[in-house]
Length: 573
Image (cartoon, rainbow, N blue to C red):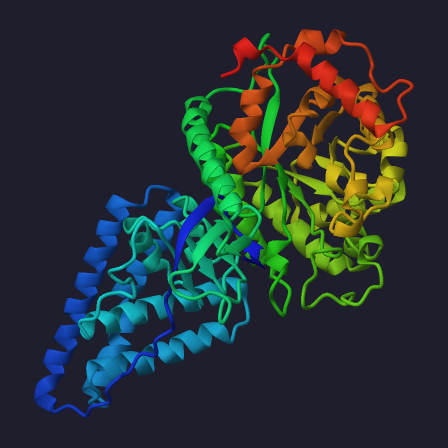
């Protein structure tokens, strides 16, 4: 058995046999036509456009429901209907007397190169869209079916170097179990479509010479792992896990439109953590109360240059509008640590987790920071955006960052007030939370980093992973201290780290006084269901369990005991 680790870009489990689709170069005949053939070649173009547009409409009707996914295919239809493309192709046919296929090659090669040379993540996607349309036109003209082969079925896992968006609907039609790609990221149109249709995907897998046709595969999209020819024990484990997930998701759909309320009627704010506008479809479908953490790093990653203010504005505006006046907390850029960018000058820091990251980066490079702030303020006109600074360690840092926000607001003549909060991720911030609360409009605790810095454990270091222990009393005391400071200063307190979706700790967080939990989109319904089983009054009345416990094992026992007494099993949905 082999284990291949790639990039997690979706969720779900796929179990099946490998079918590898190799890249096939498109062979184009270059032919000089007669004047009498011009009209015929141009007519072939019109017929191809009509046929492919009809095919896209059929896919939209059968498979595509979500707004963002429909927009991708609608964009393809717009490319097909673009009069400038038709004019360019027709000119190559009429003036240069090229046959249609060669005219398409000349036109699309030039267009695709133009977008690629712009070295921008969004324009790179446009290049992919044009490449997809070009290949569809040529396949149609050459009477070729798609790359999907007849043997592909509901027991297949498809492996490709890259996947055009148009192929996702065909994979769904074939009911394949999953998709493994060498290229692609969370923002790739193919990945967005696959995720929206619940097709598990893992990217970044160099499968050449490691996987062959017919190999048994397990695709764990949540972890970004592909198991090749797994043993029977692992196979049975994943079959059971997949069956449970399918059953659970069917049951959870019944509470997707409900509010988040405890068994005895206490309303809890349940928010979502997102990093892309496309995730808003799931957020709205599951009736989240807003966005508790809008990560903004991905627009800065995998590119050679910084995004423009307008790029950022359009990105934030898309989320702001879809949130429909619900709060959207935008965390300012948090590069550094495990999130490095090509243009970033600190790629070689000896210890990047203790280096120039989070708000430190923004204050070191104020023009980059101000570009982002201006974009957020402009987008705030279209909804309820709020700003949160990451990795704050002192009151001075918060004040300086807030001054930049006020400066940008003055430059833009932005008249509204915008709420500005602190992300509590460093012990020093928790220890002075009473002072930070006087400066901040709200707190949100990033438990992943707070635990890492509290126990001095790199959470990505497998050697000492056992020390990364959420039951550590010091860690829990810092959370409680922060919640008490927020309450005494009458500001909202949230938790947006992984602990917010951990059923062992949800009750404890609420007991501390946490008013809002912000979780990943796929954890929204599970978290709501668990909260509905809590008796909030019993939780409030339960004795303080942090007193005189200095041992993680005993802390776990105490928390487990509390949970058994505050959970009402019969009320669980």
